[in-house]
Image (cartoon, rainbow, N blue to C red; front, side, top):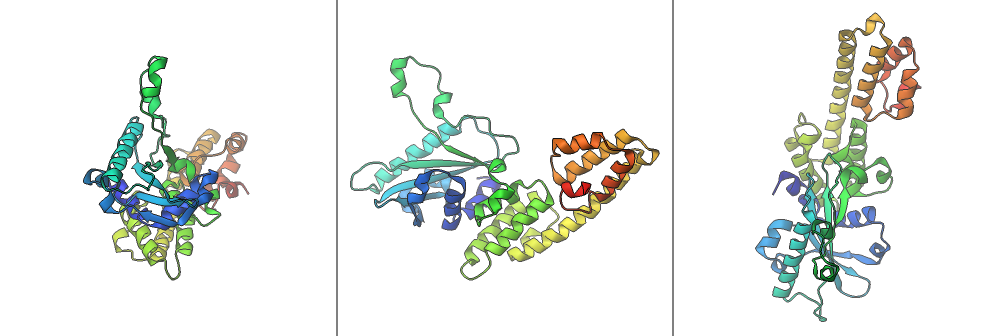
Amino acid sequence: MTDHDTSYKFLFAHAEMVRDLLLGFMDSGWVRNLDLASLEKVSDGYVSDDLRARHNDALWRVRWKREWVYLYLMLEFQSKVDHYMPLRVLTYTGLLYQDLLRSEALEETGRLPPVLPIVLYNGRKPWRASTDLSDLIQQVPEALKPYQARQKFLLLDLGIQAGEGALRERNLVAAVFAMETSVTEEDMLRASSCLVNWLEGAGQAHLQQGVLEWLRRRGPRLDSQVPWQEIHTLREAHSMLEDRVRVWKAQFRREGLAEGRREGLEQGSTTEARNILLRQLRRRFGEVPAEIETRLNGASREQLEDWIDRVYEVETVEAVFD
């Protein structure tokens, strides 16, 4: 099991995280009919060693409407695109059904419960692979199509799902996704602040601990200079990140000024000044909107120099040009 798997499975060992995943990232109306208070992890006694090794604490069930129809959530965590993921999910589903039969855990009707496989993906490249097993099977005569295996899964791409808009309402999964995929330090601090505020108070200690454990395992990806193993509260982690952001800004500003001197900004090249400013904007804020690039193309050398000085003094890309 990869460190990525274990870090997220610490989080999704909590019913609150699974609830926020369903409420925040699924648009289907049937979610409102789920009895989310009934969410519970599937007992180790229900699954074989083979299936338990694959899913650990990420296999859940929940009641649907008034009937005790179980909905099993199978969560897979991927940091690389796997073109054969539909086949893996089909295998997991079959193992789950076998285990339910073996442990006599089916409803009185004897029918198999519905399964919702969810794949969480946090890779840097967009997921281009199919989510449908039928796309992996070669073409067959029309008469054979009804006999082919079928399986689809729900893909949640963290880079697409996370965003500032998702943090307007309390959703722990959205905040964690935002920290994982943050492009700028402001994005990371905004998500960190949300987690601190949402998890303060009585009854939140177990979730705080889960998020802290995730940070200890995933934190080096955010900033390897922070002593994550020595941090004991979320507020302490947030304060540490604030300190690091101040250091980053000072460091980037020094590097920007040094880069300007190296490339001859003082010699008056408008093209060089524009290129330096673009690099600094991208490093500080991520992708630069097309309208801003157009504005830079029509700016004078003096304007560009002034904007370069402002890049590390403001909090948004728009504020550079105010």
